[in-house]
Length: 95
Image: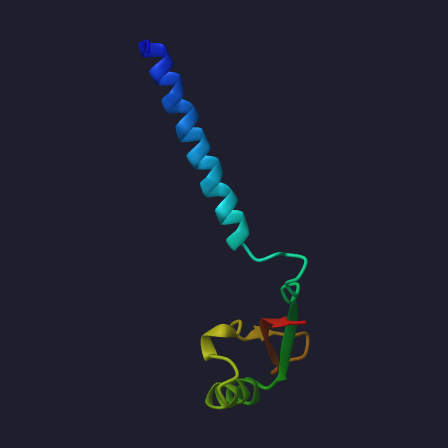
């Protein structure tokens, strides 16, 4: 057997083993048509508007309840009304 024939036989053998491996991997992969689709995520925006004291107290209360960390909220932002601020929290919820 010539050197080039040995090389060709090795290449064919390697390709055959790779194809066998890939086919066995396909058999172990779950069928996507039988899986349930992944839940869709949708943004939900929370907006607190009130006095700085009321907004801050509510943000801290929501943290104590385990709903959202204080750092998840935007900084207090002024509104058009004097002595009133707002803070925004955007969460991703599963639909």
